[in-house]
Image (cartoon, rainbow, N blue to C red; front, side, top):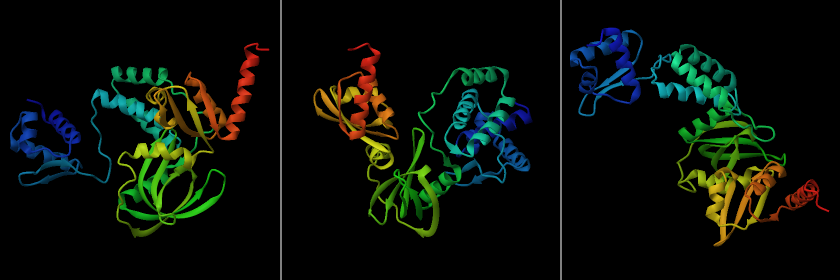
Length: 321
C-alpha cells in the first residue's frame, strides 16, 4: 500500500486529470477503502486544496478553483508539451506574454527530472521556428482578454478600429468568436451598423468600450468558423488582395498551401483560382512561385507590375538576352 504522502500526491494527480471522480473510483485507483479516500480528501482541504463534493447518482469529488494556483502534477508528455508551448508563446505576438512565458518556462525547467530536462532542452535548441515576414503584428494581452470575455458573456462592445488604409472608425458590435490565424488574432463579430458579420484584426483594435448590454447569441455565418475566416480574411484585413489563376487542379493546390494563404476555387478539372492577401506584394509573389505551376495574376494592378519586375530580374539572373 502507498504511504500517506505518496497517496495524497497520487490522489491530487487523479483529481487534476478529469472533472469528477466518485469515491469508489478513487478507492479502486488508490487501492484503499472509501473511508481512507474521505480522510485523504480532508487532508487535501487542510493543505489548502479546494476539493468539492456532490451527492447523488452523478455526484463525486472534483478539484475546485482556489484563491491560489495549486501545484500541478504532470506526466512526462504533459511536461514536455508545456515547455514547447511556452517556448512558442515567447514569440506569439501577444504583448505582455513574452516575459511571463519566460518566467514560467524557467520555473518548469528547474524542477524537471534530468531525463525530461534533456529532452526539452534539445527540442528548444534544435526545433527552430521560421520567423514571419516583415514586422509581426502585436496585440495587447488585455485586448484579447476583453474580447474573449465579451464573447463568453455576450456583451456588446464599442470598438475603435484602424483600417489597413489608416482610416479610423467606430463600431458597435456583438463579439462571437476570437480566432488565432497564423501570426494574427481576429474577432468575428456582428456589426450592428452594417447589420452583417465582419472580421476585425485584433492588433488594429485601438480601444474597446464595454456597454453592459447583453445580446442574444446569433447563429454563426458558418459552422466551421475557420472556413469562414479563410474566405473573408483577405478581403477584410490585408493591405493587398489578389486573384491568381493557376494551371492545376484545385485539390492539388489546396494540398500544397496553408489554409491561411487563401481560398482555392476550381474553374475546371485542371484549373483553379486562388484568392489571397498579404501586407506585402513580395509575400503573394513568393506564394505563387512556390506553387511550381503556371499561373496568371488577374489583380491587383500593383501585383501584376511587381510580377513583371520579378520576371525581368530572374531573366537577367539566368543570363537571358
